[in-house]
Image (cartoon, rainbow, N blue to C red; front, side, top):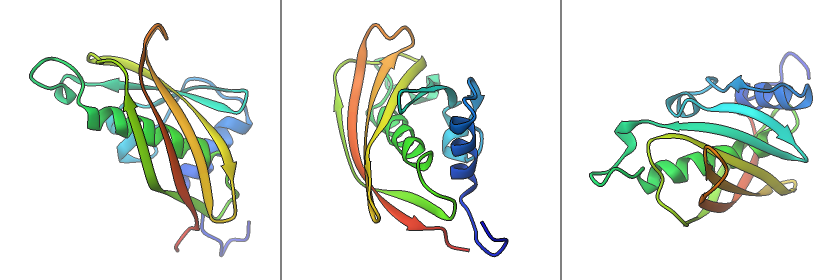
Length: 153
């Protein structure tokens, strides 16, 4: 990468962590990830495993985590998976997001397993599943398409 070529710092950080096989890496590289206490647990078989923390402030009156928070976790996990596969100077933005809720989630740790189906020249396709901390219950699943775009200086 030339000095004049910009890069997405999140892409560079995640791609480096994945390519070097690092585990339990705090993803405090952007506010959205930091707000959910995201932790890259590991990358395995082409998938990223990311732990998020749902704070009490994300729960509704009935004590369950709001659907928007769960959707954000899934969206972020899929974006990180795609970013880990992009070349320097590229980034991505969600074009479409489909989320299916399967069970209620409580405050605390939730774990997303996100994978990339395909990275094309202009669009990437990803999927993710969100589990409780013990992987005993599927909370939600999602798929998305993401625009692959050059980083703007």
